[in-house]
Image 1: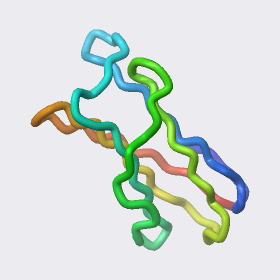
Image 2 (image 1 turned 90 degrees about the horizontal axis):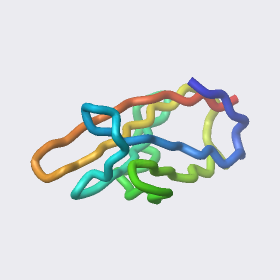
Image 3 (image 1 turned 180 degrees about the vertical axis):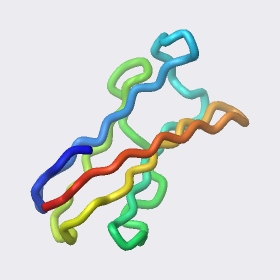
Length: 92
């Protein structure tokens, strides 16, 4: 869990690999969603920027947000297969 100051741009990043650890791209999509400390949706599922094979990021501007712990959900969709990874960030 990383800590940031309200107003900073938080760079949310994720790496996608296959079972053998090789970097891969999901065939359909790679999205991010963010919920606030009270569970309200701050960012609905949004496409992430591809940096290279298997590496994605999203720049989240935290200006105007309330301090607390936020939940980040990364979703890789590959046809009918959906893989979800969750993370947290703290805004102070």
